[in-house]
Every structure is written in C-alpha cells, then in structure tokens.
Image: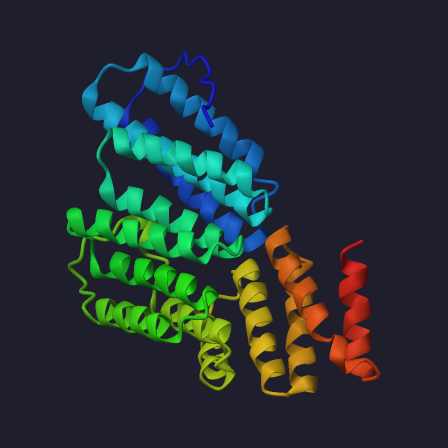
Length: 310
C-alpha cells in the first residue's frame, strides 16, 4: 500500500526524529494495553507526515533515519490491521514496511517484517507460507549478524508454522534452536529496540503455545501458566491471548472447570481491549465447549462468549 505523503512545513531536526521514535514506542505500549483500533488513525497520520518529510529532505543521514521510522510506522499499522483480522490490508502495510527497510538495507528490520507476515500466514492456516517466511527472515538476520535474541524470536515463528502443519519433529527442532539462541544472549548485544520485548517470559509462553498447537497439553500447560504469572499486568491483550491458550490446554487435559475459570478470565481481559484476534480465539473456545453441553459452568461461559460478540 502506497502512503500518500502530507505537506510538511516544519524543518527537520534531531529532536523531531527523537520525538517520532518516542511516539512509536508509546504507540506499541498502548497497543499492548488496549489494542490498536483507536491508535490506528494517529499512526497512519504520523506515517503520512513522515513520508512528507522524506519527500522534502535531501540530507542522506536524515533520510536513513526517516526510512527506518517510516518502516516501523508501516509495520505498526500493519500489525493493528492484523490484530483486527483484516489480513489483506495488513499485508499491504507490511509490504510497505519492507519497501522502506529495503531502501536502506536494514536486514534485521526486513527479518522483523517477514516474521510478522509469517505469523499472519499461520493465522490464515497457510503453514508452508509461514515456514518459508520465517526461514527467509532468518536468512536476512544471519546476513547482517542478527543478535541471538532476534534469531530466537525468528526461530519461534518458524516453530509456530511447523506446529500449524502438525509436524512434531520440525516443531521441536525449531523450539530447540530458539532456546539455544536465547541462551547466547549477552548484555553487550546490540539488540534493536523492537525485539527487546522477546524476553524469557515471551520465549516460555511461545514455547507453550507451539506445544499446545501440537496437542501436547501436558508440556504446554505449565509453561503458559508460568509465563502468565510473570507477564506484566498492563499487557491486557497479551494476557487475554495467553489465558485463552492456557484454558485450551486445560480443556485438552479434561480439566473442564479449571479451563472454564481460565477462559472466563480471558473473556474479562478481552472486554478491556479492542482485539478481534482475541475475540476470534474465544469464539474458537466456545466451539471446543460443545461436547460439554449440560455442564452448568460450560453453558454459562458459552452464553457469555456469545453475548460478548453481539
């Protein structure tokens, strides 16, 4: 998707660049807390503002910084559409982010966007596309000496693809690679800001989710539960998403009442964020409860989930 620039009258300074970067970091925090629906108009407006500055700026140093900022704003916009399950529009913005990153040869960020596309392909049940995109992301990261944290995150995205394809061996291999990379993280690593979210808690919950996708609920449940205990309380969407996965593994283990209690917590969290992706997961859980008709707690939860979608 080509973004139409806006006319910019103010001169570009390092302070403007710092302000733009700080805004992006704030957008990501608010997206984690509340979802991206209300943020999207502001992010798109800022993206148009930055492309307008790019058009009027000849300084090569400024242009490189602006391309990086535009790439991140386009990725963030794509992410908000992905979270809204508007996958075609999301892909258009992810493609725009790739174009900005390629123009300045930012291979780690190219890898980051390819990882987003890989995750989206997993949601679209295109497992082979997800695997191919994750591997392409790893190739780009390796070409630029990607940090262990980045390579760990990318390996987990590949694991999601293999899990979606129900390939046990390949999933476990990708998970092991992710953990091996993570063990090599050092405080001296020059991690990009955008990958610093991928900490031990995130590695743990992603491992649990991948194992849950494979149907290995016994291994998945304690990992997801551990991550939920450690996850920031402010990350409402993440906690809702991970609570769904915990409930799903509990249901796989025939822990019906516990699963319903966990899913109820996920539903409460989902009510506080704008995330159609989380809502879709809860609708999926409602379907999983069909065999338990007649169980009071399950039927009450089904009614609540049904009512929340209206």
